[in-house]
Image (tube, rainbow, N blue to C red; front, side, top):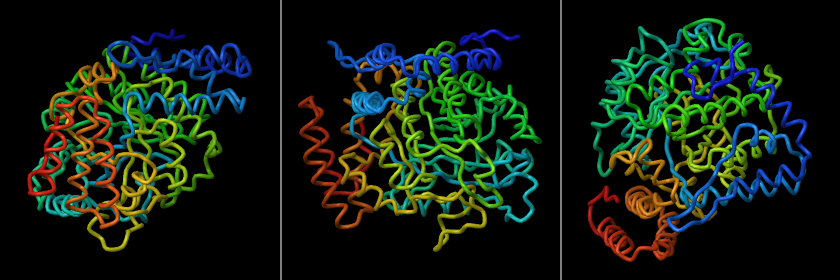
Length: 482
């Protein structure tokens, strides 16, 4: 039987079933252990020091105890600390992005995804480069600067060369004052050589959801196709980092398997990346199974309610304090609001999960990967965030300034990243307000910018940021960054 080893490169050793089951037993035994729970919560708290703020994070066992805890006042304390951590390292900024679906051709048989090969009544579509350009212009006209491209796994229809061509097309489109400045990539597990090609193409984060860490369930949920290979899929992030990609994004599809098992596996994966590469996941996403063409989420009997979902997000923030946390438009406005209060730092806005959806006047449903719960416009989302005290950020500066991987994490871990990110967020918000915002959003935004400029601690940085914002308002000059 495989032994647990977070520094191993073998999936069965760094995501070890025996260790997860022992963790769940330990968590169940201690879920009402107030003394232990208080110790874990105290360990999780951000601590100020001479150079900034530090956070210890939690082990998968410690975090699992908190997730199992059902004591209301302790859960409330988790939420409070999660928000403290998020504000300490990411401030009150929320980064905005949109997914761009390139192709729904897929050779896999995943039981939870409508793109599975046996679905004969979904319309199959693959964007041409001209169609990619049209989608990008539509996204730029909304105000987006950051995309996550998505494509099914199909070596004939969606080879790596097609993905690379699409990335090149996206970066080449300069429309009015619009530019896509960062392309994140969510495609199937691949080889080191192909990850190097993605790196050379200038991608941001490589994202790959595990779906489930429970191997037996994984094999049943992926009965056919290359994704059936659990080990190859689970070890993908190590190949990506070997291929030079600094920033990787994890995630499971909550609702497929027992959530406590998934949670432990997810934190163990983060620990593994830290142990082997010296840097944990750049992002962790928290999607839940949603209804889609020929997919009924009720067929999976592990669905989680909103309260449990909120606790999962908070516990991830406590365990992996420096990671960016993402919630998409899969979730409703109300759920997203709750999660923003417990650690989320990135949200999608005005998403369309169909191939070619952004150029359509009406939201198409025939090629959607999942139902979009939050169907508000980007302007409505931006306004909503500001009304709640969050700075909508379209910043992509860290990637383009080389602050990725361990360089980003070292700045984040001592709290110094705020010196760059806060003014960058305000400048990109000013760009949005000038080029895309409704009158009400524009008015609200500039009031926020005026107040937030005062919070920049360094006089020189504050003066430069204010001057750049003045230039943005009075001219077509864009893309200032620290």
